Image (cartoon, rainbow, N blue to C red):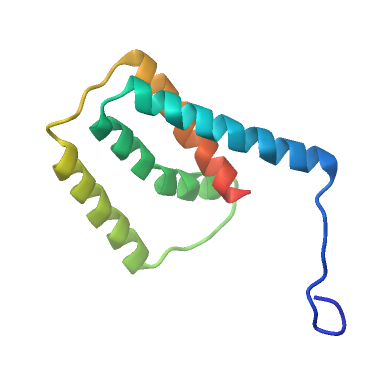
Length: 113
């Protein structure tokens, strides 16, 4: 905000804009490749891991954010729900697991930016 209370337009440096754009493209590409290489159940479970991954990255990077019991409980309930719904459609393979790992990691980092 400027002194008048209006929003002030700011621009990211070109390097940061390119970095964010590249990360967005990689996130989409890895998510699509992961979806193609895995069963729907495995893909959904790995997508659900993005939020806990964000929490873990924040914790490992020294940010001492705290999460309410409600937030943690909702993550547990959602995780159990997805696991129960997809237990019959769950296949694991090396290529899909590697793609999923990088997809979750890059998507979590991109969302943090």
